[in-house]
Image (cartoon, rainbow, N blue to C red):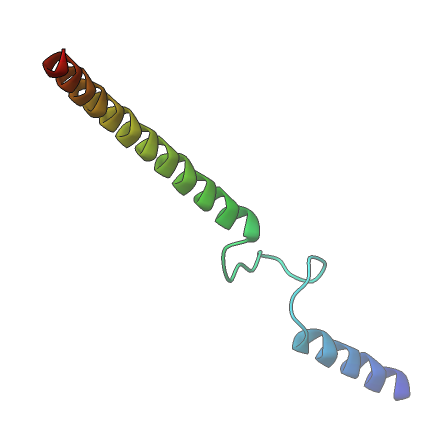
Length: 75
């Protein structure tokens, strides 16, 4: 009698707790992991750095042309 009651309480407690790797059959995913967030942030940073470098190169060329034009006029 006591053994069956303990068995029933154990089963009830197992149902109440969150599923673990040992008692679940399908994985439970409720959100993105930190690794996925890191991957997304790194991709955003790579695109941002490439964009800033592109803008820097184009403005560098613009300032070089402006410098050449003003130095030719002063000579």
